[in-house]
Amino acid sequence: MRKAVATLLIALLLAGLAGCGSGGAAPEASAVQSTVRAYNEALARAFATMDMNELSATATEDQALNEYFLMAALGEGRVRMLSTLVSIEFGDVVFPAEGQASVTTTEVWDYAHESLDTSETVRAEQGVVYHLRYDLVLLDGRWLVDQVTALDGEPAVGDVVP
Image (tube, one colour):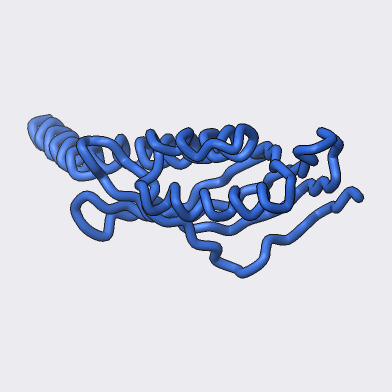
């Protein structure tokens, strides 16, 4: 009986120690995923309103500037992009160094390009699949997207509507 109790106590102790080792990473991984979701929501709003200030709470200044150049190019073409994130799947969140995180995603987006002059939809795309890597940094206690990298070149377009 004592042997069984001792074995049970050792098993519980080991389980508790194992939990302590991974418990800190799970909330941080969840925070990184939440930041990526918030970034995508802010990015969609930013392109719809043509105001990259939407990204200030979720992205570094450099990353927001990269997106600004894309928005400016659309504006020069006299179109705005309306986008909807259809789905997102996360890969493992890794922490290569203190204050840094990286996560891969597979995302499906729908887009409509709307004329700034007539408000007509001039182009629509549905089912655009991206495989991305988000690199984040921890600044002032919050995660910010620092860089977004496409992992497989061009997105795969499922269905293009004229």
